Image (cartoon, rainbow, N blue to C red; front, top):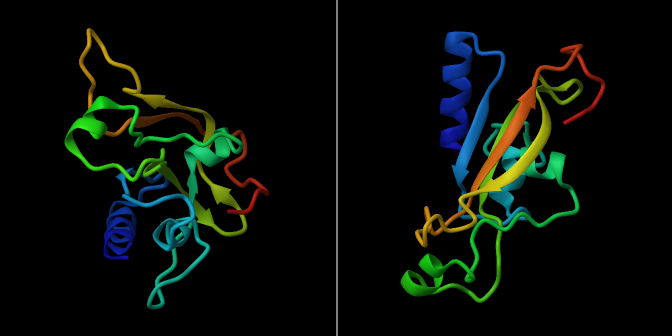
Amino acid sequence: MAAARLVEELADRVGARHVLVGGDFNADPGASSVAFWRGERSLDGTSVCYWDAWERARPREAGHTFTPGNPLVSENKPAPGRDRRMDYLLVRCEDSLYGPTLEVSSCELAFDQPVDGVWGSDHFGVVADLVIPTSLRTSVPC
C-alpha cells in the first residue's frame, strides 16, 4: 500500500498520464496484494487500479516467472516444487470506468532461457509492448 501511495503521489506531482509499475511482487496472481493493485480490494481507504499486462495479453497462459526448472532457483533457493508467476508489469487505469491510457498489444517472458549457458536471474522478466489507443477514453473498465 505504501508503494502504491508513493507511485500515485509521484505521478500526480509530475502530471504523468501513463504509469507503469513492474517488479518482483513475491505473490501469486490470486494473492490479496495483487488484487489490491488490480483494483479488486482497497486497503485502509487506499485504492488503485492497474491492469496486469500478462493477463491482458495472455489470459489463458500461466506466465510463470519463478520455476524450479531454472537452475538458479533449484540450486540456490528452496522452491516449493511448483511453477509460479510472481513478477508483474502493471499499467495504471485512469479510473474504473475508462481503463488504462495504454493498451497492452503483446507480453512475453524475458530471460527465460540461458545465453551461452548463463541464466540472467532466478526470476524471468516480463516485457510488454504498449500502445496509446486511438481514443484515450476507452469503454473497457479496469
